[in-house]
Length: 162
Image: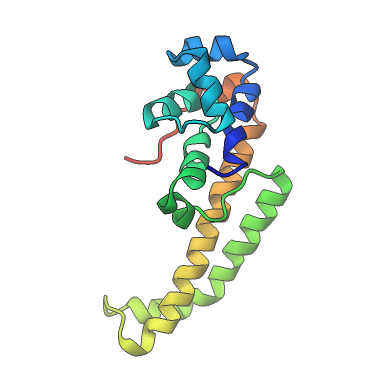
């Protein structure tokens, strides 16, 4: 497990102003078990991660957990980071502005509902820029959520699917 992973659970618990005993009780795990998660001795199961996110008011924790603990997470979410809000916003704007010049070319590519051999480079460039925009969008979302008051965070319904 990476060094940074050893502390993401602790950082989130601290964010919620809970000591280990309080958090363990709310999470329905033993204090020793929680300590092992925070020290990186064990990886928490998905159910515990989802409870942590809800109880700690840190909806971005599951993605950080996936990014730090799974190859798939590292591949899908390589550049998601929680940063200061102005920096996250400016990065998002910059990434989105990189997409705009490509829109006209991409419209021509997708008009016939397929991507031909000579259109692959255009589509790959467009997809790369859209992915960068999506990653910076996630960073902006998580940075904004982190800056809200704790009670508002806890009432937020946050899902990645459906």
